[in-house]
Amino acid sequence: MGVDLVFNLESDPENLLEAEDKEWIPMTKLGRLVKDMKIKSLEIYLFSLPIKQSEIMDIFLGASLNDEVLKIMPVQKQMHAGQRTPFKAFVAIGEYNGHVGLAVKCSKEVVTDICGAIILAKRSIVPVQGDYWGNKIGKPHTVPCKVTGHCGSILTGLIPTPKGTGIVSDPVPKKLLMMAGIDDCYTSARGCTATLGNFAKATFDAISKTYSYLTPNLWKETVFTKSPYQEFTNHLVKTHQSSVQRTQASAVVTT
Image 1 (cartoon, rainbow, N blue to C red):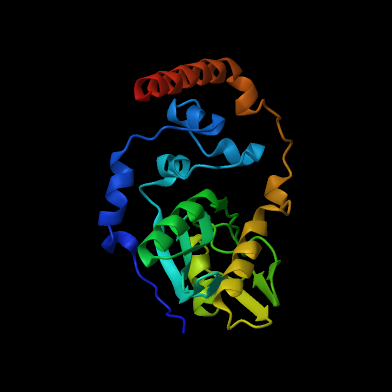
Image 2: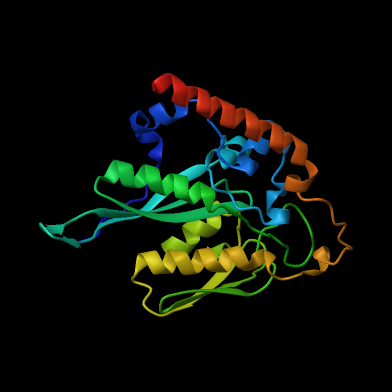
């Protein structure tokens, strides 16, 4: 039987201290550029660069990120020695101002499950486009247009609403929309919405599509620039050579 939990992971700091104390060693080109302060903003989304290390998002959004466990449920896995019962965790992460992520992790222990899901959620963070209904007063408060997301048998739709309406939704989509920074929105869903995992994934799919439509404020002429990989090619070559030398030296010491 599944256990629905919505709580803050600040109550489990002991399991995250070891990872925080260690110095981050970037293993990707994007990670090296971010650590060396060559990339100082979230322009990585403009070039569709894959985020393969969660520490990249910690540098940009670490202080403002909030994570919450949507659900922890046991699942069964058939092994040669019999059945095992690992746990599956659904974790949402966001900073309530235009960025949200969702991830699923399955592990033997609940603590390991949650920590792994947090790392995957940071890597899956996407930008969310906000817009206005009517006059452009204050900050964007609703979605720019009707968007739909799909997962399994569930089809979730997000509909713009006037300011002050609030989020008219079930608890799961409401939590994701709040973490994305959306204050007013109508939602519609059909299918087996009792399956919380697919319901959350369908909502996240709809939220991630807010930037897939060119609204009038995005009709400006685009000025194309070089990708960070092309702009900082020489720096990447130097850092790669130094990292190779460091790994070779450590291998010699261990042998």
